[in-house]
Amino acid sequence: MVGFGDDAAAFDGVGVVCFVAAHAGCRESVSELDAARAQAWGLVNHVVEPEELLPTCRALARDMASCVPEVLRGYKRLIDVGYGMSLSEALAFERRAGIESARAASSAEISRRRDGVQRRGRDQRDSKRDG
Image 1 (cartoon, rainbow, N blue to C red):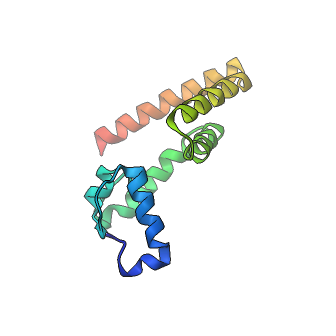
Image 2: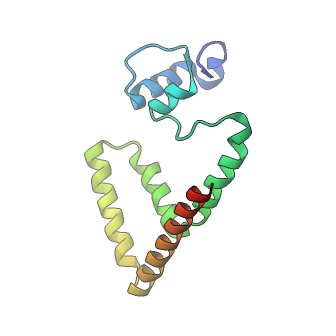
């Protein structure tokens, strides 16, 4: 459970509740938020049992580490900068960033990245099938 009750002062409780409401489309008042609801609202990506937490985190870290570092940094920048934008502003920002990224990459680099993305996709598919 994520609590917004007695411990809320440590997190500026009103701000947290407003943040949750604004970004999750919540139109109701909650004092506790269970994992299933947090996932349904898009506040968390994964909900796992406690014994699966560390293996899941390690798998996510391996997945992120397998990305092209420049691309991963670019995605993180898109999220960080675009988060405070309206949808139309964020889409325009994403488009500009994509064009800039494409201009900065050579044909050889794009080919290398494509091969890496395809290899990564095969590895992910195989690990899901074997897992």
